[in-house]
Length: 397
Image (cartoon, rainbow, N blue to C red; front, side, top):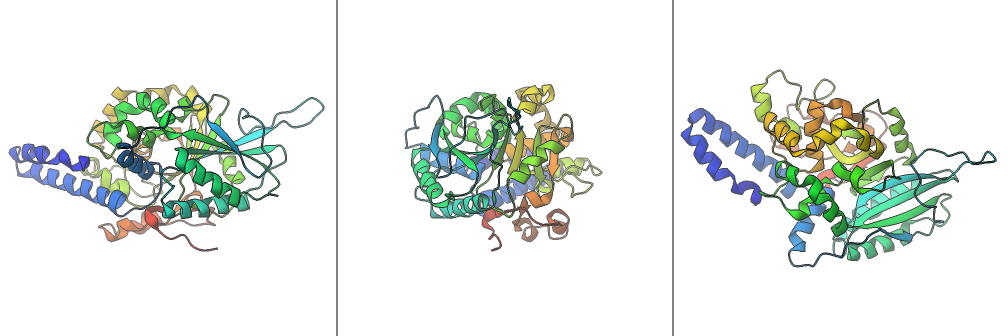
């Protein structure tokens, strides 16, 4: 419980400063306990964050898989596609033809060998995704999985079962070794981990929490756009349509992401909100800034590489400055980082409609926020992707 070890000194120090500050420390402790309870006791979702937690718990006694210079590529039953192109832009060939166009999706799939619940979620997600996917003859769907060796074999078996033999589109499957990615990520994100990780210190394995934050530095430069997805999703439309959202990015935007649909960050920003009663930070839509949910993310890798502002925000000094300004102490890795910088620089983000990440968890409604819950949770329109976060059942077809 590294999250709690730092509290007794804080409580003692605050007590010496007087009853008012002791009250604030008690509130801060309650806030941290509530967030911890939601995400680590009340949630069974398999996301980048929870997958990393399992990696951290298990890796102590398990040697890391050797780093590989290039990801392993496994062919699905659908005809394999060509090498990765510059992104989803059709290229004209001599004679008037259209060159291959690559669409990239990435999912975390770790410690799945003996995890029936995770396998069940992956089956629902992949079955619905592949059943509804439609691409043109010159388009290639690239499925990226971040896995260790044992989970890789589970994923291959699932794909053999679920990849339709006559889907009518090309599909390529690429596996990335989780240990190799962690090696690359750790130097980039080490300084920010103390602000957005559950542990009390900087953990090597926690770096995978932040894959999306530094994806532009990890993926080959030929990949200009990628969509990162949680596994606790169910697709209700052709995933090809989601890539069209990249075309709606305004100048300066680098990431497409939906709002958080619970008052999670109303809670996390409680001290800043107390000190700034008129702030939009943590407030509900449409006028407030409720923060983001990282279950579905569109990463414009080329825009991330080209953004001087984003490069500055990754620097340890800027992370520390914003964390101090907002009194921010999070536990959700990339989601917390994007939420915090979004309060300061909303122009970096293209806000996806809630129907692209229709979160179903209602935990905060029963834990102190019933009076404002519906203002965050409301979502009108035809749902395109359901997100069964905190183990919430997803509606049947």
